[in-house]
Length: 475
Image 1 (cartoon, rainbow, N blue to C red):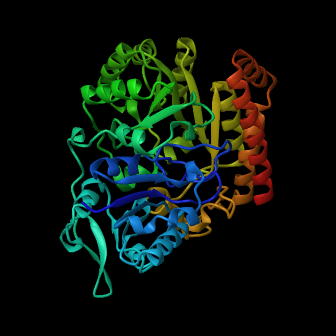
Image 2 (cartoon, rainbow, N blue to C red):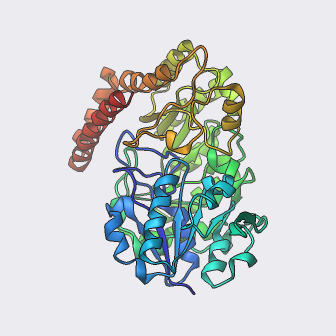
Image 3 (cartoon, rainbow, N blue to C red):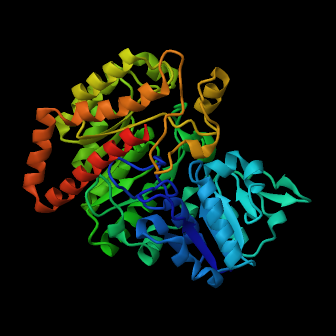
């Protein structure tokens, strides 16, 4: 087995885009998600090492001191971070010329030919699901014999063939064992999870067809493949006992509630374990399922509302009705389930009027917390192709998705709505949602209940204002 390093490279201060996160830019509040994709690879390669440089605050100079200790380096990259990650690979190759370097992630899966030709430091790039691809290479297989990668052959990009997606998800080992070995749980936090928390996947794929969503369209597909309930429950039981400091487990499946029978069965098992948990959900979960989840430890749902305009939801193939989302939210409030709602300004069909209606919609729904972002038209998504065909895309280079300081750029520009107006709408949205007397009072009372929460939210408040100030200066 090759001495293998799995690396989430250093990038912008506070930038979490190289990990399992879907929000590949600096957030309004500094946050770090567990590098689950890399941890899954590390779990398949005995004796390997996982380093999450952004979460640990490690610089490239520090990392390069141990470059000679490894034979194989795997970097999880993304469209906004690819140029930076390529420079990291080049620095490693200069420090250790014999080091085999591979890239994985949606960006290189879609842009395989340009990615392998981007630098001589990159020996191969992975196709879609790459777990056992990496394992084979770490075991010493010749690159030409490994299915699911692109290499250079006679100076040209050569794809070795399509590897089938994993159907039996129980064949993947637990990531929490790698978390214990290589990560520090207190490094991972965000503005709506209890701290410290832990995130992991119970499955891959998503039934929904949202035109902007990256992972189902590039890596995981639309067939939701899950681990068995017994397998997930066993890992959570082990993690509960191994990490007594963890206050909440988050299931980062694209939409855990896609399979209602499965999530109900899982909830019952989690209830037996006495853990607090949360997950991603679509705003169409029926009351009966929500109640089973709540009665068995569910604390919070992360819900992509996106827009309050039905036409926009139809445009992006969200598969949800505004009226249904309102009913779902009322049910959550009644049951005491907290919601972190996510919204996007500038989707196809957006106008000044729909921006206003979505802000009012968010105020009416009144989730506990929100995230407001801009459309990230990633290569490989329907939105990217649509934007190119209609002339909405102002730049095709991945480095244009975020600014030099890591703030998300507005890269869609419509004849009736400029990119500057879309960018400014994010600030307006945040201010009008949070700076309401009722919302400010509820947040203040939450702070008063727990001194640790107060200290944390005061810090996050400062970060939030800095975020708004940074966006104003980016615009």
